[in-house]
Image 1: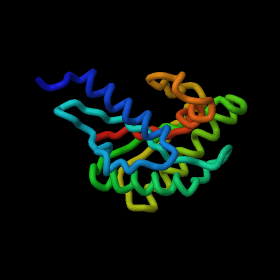
Image 2: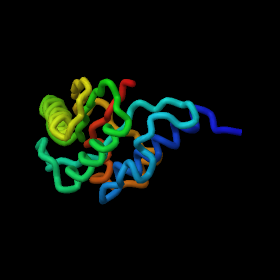
Image 3: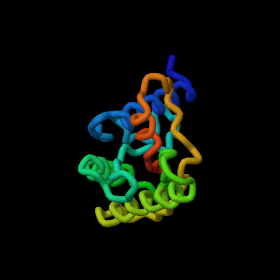
Length: 158
């Protein structure tokens, strides 16, 4: 018997949590995270483990690795359009975090376009308003929880 849609979505969310919390980037293509459909269940939103220098929209060396990996995924999936949704941790003011989340999403969009993404794109900044909810928050220290919140989600439109 095949797993149902809720089970597949939960597994995808757990895999996302592990990628975001990993100390080093986990290649999306290597682990099947480029897939946008599993057994007919559409999973169009992916959180990327692109890391940024604290308080800036500049990629860390690990962030560049993850951005390259995302670029390769988009080349294989070829979505017609993407929405990049930036998020931030709760350190700083809400207004500054919203501005930073937009800047990070734009930085990733500019990188993806420079790497050859040809579809339409838009950015949205959520700031600290939509924190990542791990399966078990007690399993992480505060810095790791903040890292889970510093993310850009990619919403794919096929």
